[in-house]
Image (tube, helix red, strand yellow):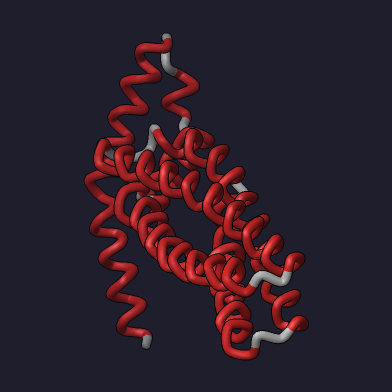
Length: 192
């Protein structure tokens, strides 16, 4: 999945573009206008790219999430779509303002970019909750290891027996993982 690897890069680009935009608002120089416009365009392309990778990652993890996690993932997808569209529009406004030398249009784009950047951080918080609160990546890894190495599955008589074994393993993993996570957090705190 590319989404986890690319999302952090795309999260910081709107912030960088916002900083350049604010600097432009105070300096009002042509050079800063061009730099902030290009930074906004790059940020928009990155956000659109991350939205695209998210549309492929979401279906892969959806079934591993609890019902609350599935609901959160749907909200995350919806906000991601809005952010991708908004960043595209903001970049377009900023580029048009830069080309036509319309300060008011560029200022509007910078203000909108600041709002989108704030929403981007909210989106990142929600994404982290999906992974670490609802997704339980440790559980997914444990289940994958079980599926790859289980002799019981290979000796099962039919599909129903396989499904029963997998369900049993999922229940076992769900029961034991919180204790494993707590233990790992305790070891980490003790080592600090």
